[in-house]
Length: 511
Image (cartoon, rainbow, N blue to C red):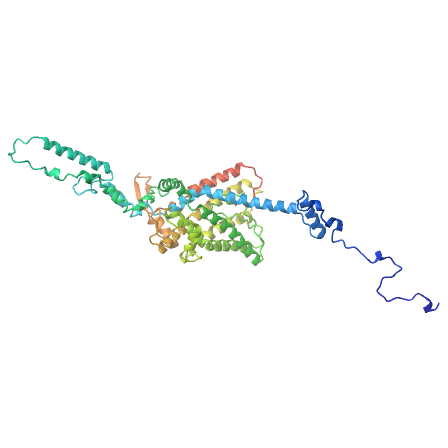
């Protein structure tokens, strides 16, 4: 067959007239059909019951690769928000319940014992000499007799002079009798009724600090400090600095966790497990203080590196939040009448957002040493002693209690040094700053420890052989652990509740 007799090959791009049009046209499927996209006139301006479902189905049709479920997403967002508010409410309630004990503990830590305070002896000497304070003629009243006693003495004196005047003078001459010299010294009624200040009223403006100064007769009792605070400033004084304490505790946990995760990611180390919210250590972390870590480093491939990261993050967190902790101590040790009392106003009064240089060393030690100890103990028990909560639950529980008790004994002396350094820094910037107690001096870390043990105050010891009571200088080891009884009974209560409760959920985060 000749090539010209066959069908020619067409090079045109136009559709072949012998094939139907539907073979070339494909209707797009990314848009809804025209009938479904146009709203009905009857529903314009009115929300329908299935509006959320129609929006969800429309979005799913437009973007089939993305799975969007508005109902599920809104529910999860609401659950997360509610969980956050519940956690904040729980934290604030915990701070509110523990604040009176925390305030009393800080007052005991920064106060100078009464035997070492020069300000305590002056009121006692004034009370011991009741008749030396008064009028010049010896008929004045003292603090013990009061203002009414002076009027009684004047009334008795006036009655005596009038009776002497009524007695006829048979041995005198006819000349008029002179007035009694005692009657000349009689105070006129106008002067008696005039609002002249009594000796008691004259002493009150001289010592206005007597209204808010605490008289701590027992420097080792938290309940006595709470009673003294309630007597001088009422129930409001027990909850001073509550909002600042709550903010400080929340920022302390959040900043520490953030810096720890950041340092672990930079060094290429895995995330550290914990802390468990139901564990013993977390439950005993007092708000506003250097609490227990509750971390477990047993699964880390580099335990030493993870331990260094834990200590470094705690140290940086404490130094960053030291100004806020300084404001918290200021709100606690100053009277309620001293302004400013707001958190924002105190932040504005700070010369810098960095802590003073005198606070760097005690703050770093107070945040680093307890954190390292509480993170190292679970690692030691698991790797060296081969003790796990699964193999020996009772021994593990006792080890957790002993670890928390030792952590408490480490944390309280360091916290005492930090509080005294903060008060010393406040006094250095404002020498006339009023305080509810006589502050103890800060002599450095080692100097303060030595002063508490052997210089400040006095302690009585009884000799078992002779039965004699000896008085020694210094507060002894108990002066370094003010408030240990509250922490100890809190440990016993939480540990007992955990021991009597169900055993599920116990394990890694108990420290």
